[in-house]
Image (cartoon, rainbow, N blue to C red; front, side):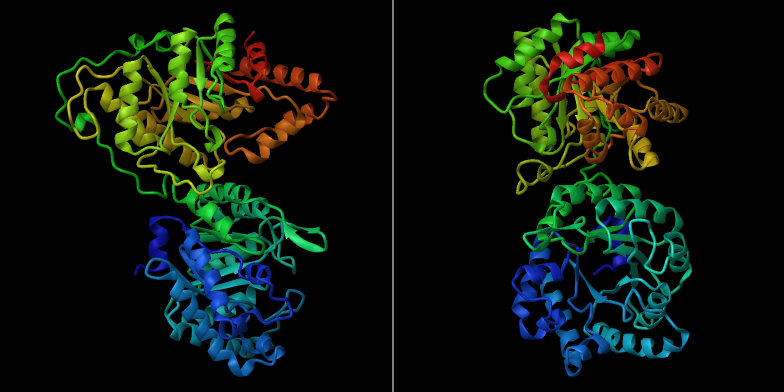
Length: 609
């Protein structure tokens, strides 16, 4: 089995979630020694481990956090120290099986309010050595020294742990300000751990929820060359009917886990308040991310014996393509397919857009991974019955390569010429948490598939003659969490054959211009259609800013929206801001793709007036 360090070089790993939270939820009171349950109620502990393994955790932590001499002595259980630690490893190993790793969980001896004294070092080292030796003898894959608040104690434990020949990770608890209880800042902590030869990986756990943990990760990652693991709490607990309940949803927890991976974290998991539901949602999402999942490799048509076909020039593919090729401004309005078999309201909205002179209707594919009428069926109906072009989003989530290729060929035969190729949201971020995504390829791979079809070659290398003439659009995120990674992903799409791009909603014109300049400096120049979202209220703005990945709203805009006192004021101000953004980027973009918030097409059209 590969070591954790070897695995982390291949992809980020999913750690399990809270043990104490789960034990308490099973009806065990907090005055019980939870580690002792490994001996007195092994079925309970084994069941929790199994729930996390079934949820998709790559790492199962032993229930041995406080199984050291001082803490067991306080419960009158010191004579069972060895039995508890050995049982903890065996129960975790049984759930981990052949695929997951087992981490030996070891907590601090000192409490956060205590002071670390040099004359305690030998005594503390012996206490750690006693527990670590048992965990190592039972065969843990690595040590997770976690929830430490004294960096000196953590390094002392790491020094002892390193002697047992397994990787050592040290995880510190800090506040939302990035400080320990004694005021040590993240920068000091990371520097010390990064220079410590006994420490193989670093991390933060407990203390804060996902948002604060993300902020701490932003500060830590540039300072370390070692893999970083983040295990946040499920938000901050709130009192409900006398009980402290963690209110963050699995989806909310997952969004921040994804952002941490995009930043560069090599492991994400959960601490207090998290459950197998959080880990399951997170695991499904993270394991489908580009750079994590191993996608099918799609070779270029140029590498094959391509048939002698005449590829359709961009300007001849459709009216939208002709305007882009000629350097004329294009406009589109995003209209979501209905949660109904009745297309009449959608067709009426599209007719309104056509009458207003809009060039195309932008049709999302399963927005937020929800079930709606087939976007392809909707697009075909719009083009046939309204006579306006569509920009059909096509994502990699729901179909394998064969199915996607069939859809693209069938849509083209039906008259669809313009696709926006996107990777897509995993289904558990929508209404169907038990659905499984496919993601044979990501947006780069699917772009190459379409490029090949446009040159007369299918996925299997078979001739397609005549070839398709699909206009290939891709997404772009100028405000991505990790700009360099997003820029390279964007350039990869261009190299795979992308002919134009549509961005995420833009609220910071300078961010878009910087992104375009960076892409152009590396040869990535294609027409860019700016995504525009007319805000309708401060609440709407705050939701987009805090909850929608890839959308960054400057504080100045949030402050402006706060002055709207009525619904009408909010909408008018949102339109005004959207028009200002359009004006600021007018000389650089190829057009605008305007969203219709809550399906109100008039708001989008007023932006384009």
